[in-house]
Image 1: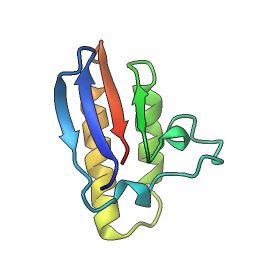
Image 2: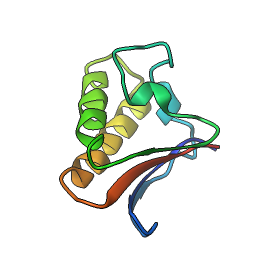
Image 3: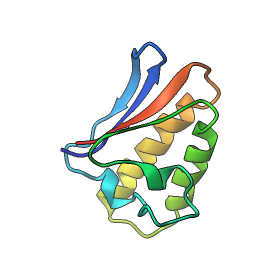
Image 4: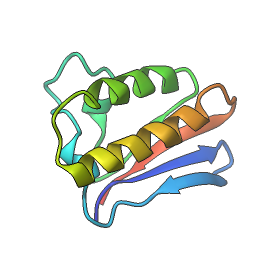
Amino acid sequence: MGIELVWEEENGTELARLSDSQSLLQGFLPSESALEFSCLRFVDPYGDTIFNTLQIPVLLHELNSLASNPLEPRVAEHLHKAISLVANAQGHIHTYIRFVGD
């Protein structure tokens, strides 16, 4: 099981989900020592990581910066789906992006 990506309201209501049954998200996550990634380097593959409304633009910027890296086609497609989900969440108050680890 991979890391699911969920856009949710503050009460936990799910607005969108990107499933990851093939563990594709880990194919583009930076390591925790990658200091240039103030959000993504803290995604826990074994637990939940939550980003709030103020962090979502930074998260989106970091995801977009990864899109210029050479990636396996399936991983690149998953990254673009993640970018789309996070972009849709940007600007909405009282919503969160949750990375749901294994």
